[in-house]
Length: 235
Length: 253
Image (tube, rainbow over all chains, first blue to last red; front, side, top):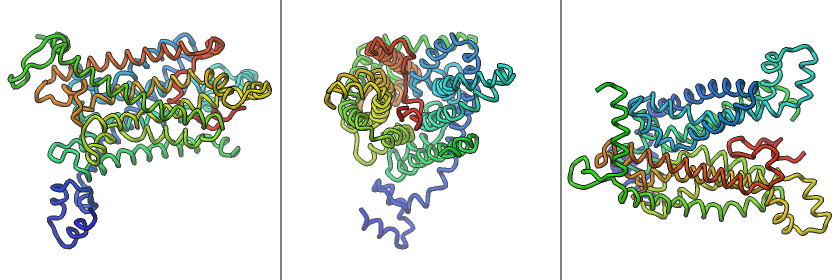
C-alpha cells in the first residue's frame, strides 16, 4: 500500500482522485479535502453542546424537584429510562411526523437521551452529601434553600460533572446518526453518497467525532477542577 | 385535512405497513407485512444475541478476575470512556471500509460495543463488595475461588446484570444500522427509503423502539430477580455504567 502512495505524491495533481478510485487511506487526499469537514464538524458541535446544555437545565430542575419530593424520583427515572432505551435512530423517525425533518427533531431526541444520565448523577450527588454536613449548615441558620444552593449542590459537583461527561460523549455518538433526522453532522459525512465507506473519508469523519468527544470530556474535567478547589488541595 | 389528523395518518399508515404487505415505492416488489418484518426481526435477534453472548463470555470472566485481585481501576474507567466516545456508526463504517461487509463484521462491531459496559459494571460490582465480608470469608478458610463464587459473585450480580442490560439495549439499537453492511435487520426499511419510503422507515422505527424498550424492561426484571434478598432492602444498583466510577466509589472504605 505504501509504494503507490509515494508515487502519487510526487508531483501528480491527480493523486487524490486515484485515492478515491482505489479506496485507499491516503494522507494526501485528507490534506486536499480537509476543508469539507469543517461545516459537518461545527454542526456536530452544535448537535452535542446544545442538547447537553438543555438536558442539564431540565435535569437540574427535575432533580431539585425530586430532592424536595422524594417519591417523584422513581417515576422520573422510569419515564426518562424509556426515552433512553428507544434507539436514537428510531426516535429520529418517530418524531418526524410531529417536528418534521431537521434540527428540531434531532434536538428533541438528543435532549431526551441526556435526561436519565444527568438526572441520575445529580440525584446521586445530592444524596451522597453527608447528613452531618447538612445538619451543620442548618445549625448555622441556613434555610433549606440556602443549604441546597450553598452546600449540597456545590458538594455534588463531582458527580454532576461525571454525569455531564458521560452525557456529552454519549451525545457525540448519537449525533452521528442525526443525518437520519435531516440534521447533518459528521455522520452525514461518513455516509456521503458518492464515496460510501471510502477509507480516508471514514477515518477522518469518524476520527473527528472521537476527537470531539475527547475534547469536550477534557473541557468538562477542567471546569470541574476549577469548580472544586477543595478536591485539588486534597490530592 | 388538518395538521393533527395528518400526523395520525402517518402513524396509521406505518402501523398498516407492519401488518400488511404493500407495493414498494417503485411498485415492482411487495414490501412490509408480518412475514417480511419477522424475517428482519429474526436476523436482528440473531446478531444481537450472538454479540451479547460473545461479549459476556469475554468480558465478564476477565472483569471478575480483575475485580477479585483488585487491579484494574484504570482498565474499567478507560474502557467505558473509550467505548462511549466511539460512535457506533463510525465503528461500523470503519469495519466496512477496512474489513468488509457481512455477518461476521457486524457481530464483531456489536461485540466491541457490548464489552465496555460489561467490564465496567462487573468490575465496579466486584469492588463494591464489602471488604469485611471478604475478610470474614477468608477467615473461615474459604479459598479464593470459593470467595468469588459464594460471596463476591452473588453480591456483584445486580451490577453485572445492569451491565448486560446496557449492553443488550445498545446492541439491539445499533443492529438497526447493520443493513449498511448488507445484513438485513429491522433497519433495512430505514436504510433503504428508495424502496420502503417514509412509511416503511416509520414502521420499522416503531418496531425497533418497541423491541428495545421490551429488552430494557426484560433485563430490568432479570436484574431485580438476581438481586440477593438482603440487598433488595437497600437502593437498587441500577445502571452503574452511567455514573463514572470515581476513585472514591471504587476504593473500599
